[in-house]
Image (cartoon, rainbow, N blue to C red):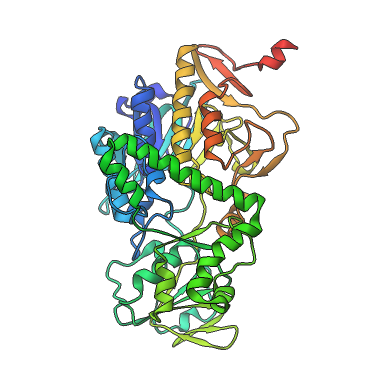
Length: 512
């Protein structure tokens, strides 16, 4: 490995940039656009571990893969969605991200096949030194060192290399094939075969209707039900607006409407959970009957305590009602040669078992982060405005909302990063980092009880109890706060050429 304390001046010129973005997915390409338009004096590069743009949407290839957020809020505000579906499929989203990158000259800034291993901040140099490894076409591992003044992680929140795949007793005895959706085999033929999907989250509810009709039988096996809501695959109102108005104006109006509806429903679940339960249950009872709805589609928890699953045009309900698929609520006892035996004693016959058991969270793409040689332990850090870590200079990470489209929050983060960079330039500053106030109470950063969040709690940074150390799950409020945010509040800055950082006092401290 290279010496992480190497000075930036020792590096090859093509490895030195003002800003390094990690990840060429939805967040990373959006971050590059904002840099080009709102902080255009900064040079940048994007480091992407894979060989294509798209991130999540290039990785996942399972049948029916799609967004479970409406595409008008999921797409960029500066690049109107032109497709017909309001819940877009994975390949369409991947093409959209790649097209935006190409249209705005961002693709030329992407360096593919570079997996970031470590990043080290030097206060002496006021720069990050970032180490990457790459391996292409079986060639020996190649190590590169990059240097930047600001590091921005847009690598998402889960592990691309390893999914959550618990081992089931007797799994080695199963005569069929076990597949995890994150690593879907290109040559998997499920036509005319019996499929059991273990899981009840977004992936499972996508797979069931996509495979039903081609497979001989599809069964979704869930330990407990998940809250679901049906949305139309096409949006007649959006289509009318797009026909009659300029693209950007129509896009903005559709986003405002969809944001109002989604945020309004989320607030309903927080303040009147009983009403939200009834609102979600009523159409399912009407379609499936009270007995089936109560057994398989009525969770014990309240809506949005875990992520809400969206089903386009009720496709999952229709597949079950037609008899092409089945939902079973039970526990796995063990695998047997012919399928899966349940705790009740029933055996689900299967030729293929799909373990849609969830993802494994991993912030920062697993890279090791150091400040002046000291490791940065994420669980010990508090997030500032949902994007910076206390005590870590010139660093930001993009984390989306849990109750709305990921892009809404990541775009706010990118615009804030540009404001921060411009503030450094305009005030002759070299670096800045948040400083958490003494005694600041801490809370989990993600307000969900989903399995993948609970498993990762000990590895995630935390949020505080007061602004600006909270992560609001409220886009309209967040939008106002981020645009008007005081860039000096709870911050310590280092002037260019200064030997030591200097703390910036708040207006309240100055007054006192």
